[in-house]
Length: 148
Image (cartoon, rainbow, N blue to C red; front, side, top):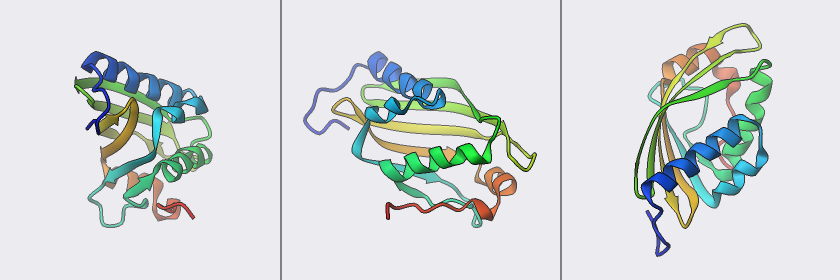
């Protein structure tokens, strides 16, 4: 993915992404420094009534994450269960687990492909069980995709 910059070694790219998710799930706002200002984040969801937009900017995805705190008063655990890295491409398998404020269990599975460019996360494609998200989170969770 590198646009003229130095391509990271696979092990360094993997650790960079793992550090991002460790900081993100730990509530460390510095994690966003690892994301390029013009980064894109795409949720790949098939459910026609999926409650979230598909396309995000860095700012709008950060807002989605920060706003989700109110939906999970006891927190949402995000566990990485596997990784694969090749140069500046890192694939993550993960599972989330948490109780919503309405008492429903949210336990989703994810596959994310992260592309790095010039030492920052540039593109993320997040695949998830959109049927489960729709069933548990419902249509009232809809958040805007683009910055105002």
